[in-house]
Image (cartoon, rainbow, N blue to C red; front, side, top):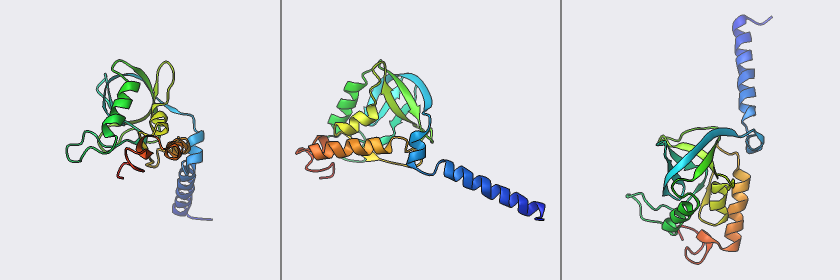
Length: 175
């Protein structure tokens, strides 16, 4: 008969294994019921992958990375201004959106991390930016709910020579 300390360690180990397997990979995260971050209204677009809401929150779009356009420490990257303008065309001030959270709610800068869907038509903004060639994929686990969909959208844009993969950027934003 194991001691109570050994039983406790065994039980803790089993719980840790179960917890780790519950969020082990993208297939589990993709199949999970989406967490709702609620609805909100866009105040303005900060850059291609960051927006500000009328409630004061800054939202970083999960799964995508658009070219830099506003960081004073870095040069404007190829299609940076165009990516920001495209996001602004999708989400003009006053646009109502639904935020869908993943595993982590905030990044290290305090921004809300979310998948953004425009209301009332449901346009999935993160995915649209990738499909139009204005964003590369940026996967930061454990936020991987739509990793396969975004990967496919980026691959389609790349193969079609759209946006970052067109002649303007010669094969990528650093190119």
